[in-house]
Image (cartoon, rainbow, N blue to C red; front, side):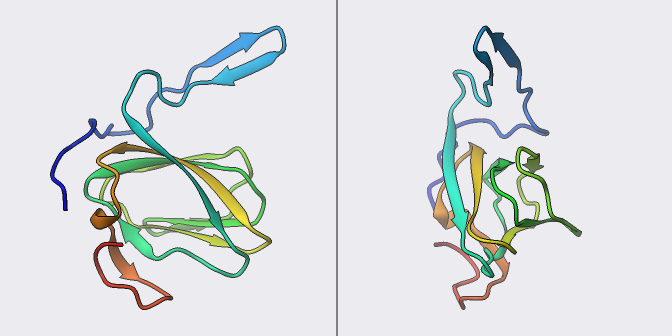
Length: 130
């Protein structure tokens, strides 16, 4: 695993200001801050491993109906547009109960597949890594 830290991991969700324009508005999730942005898609009836990451915190933005989320011990079905902060080392999982579910992930810290720690996995992947 690479030890280089790309950016600081915030203790909580970063502020996300909303800017009003004549045509509507926009929100900046990271402004001149090193982050990794991923669009995750989970197919109906599938789920990610129950996992954590020591080197990054993640902000998930739910895009579709049918997402089921577990953060720590809490489990719920968030609405599209809901924003979820996942601190470093916090166990989390994303599942789909209806169609393909997409989540925009903004990761703060050292994003790499090798930092995954798996606690449960439906696909018999290793406890650590990709």
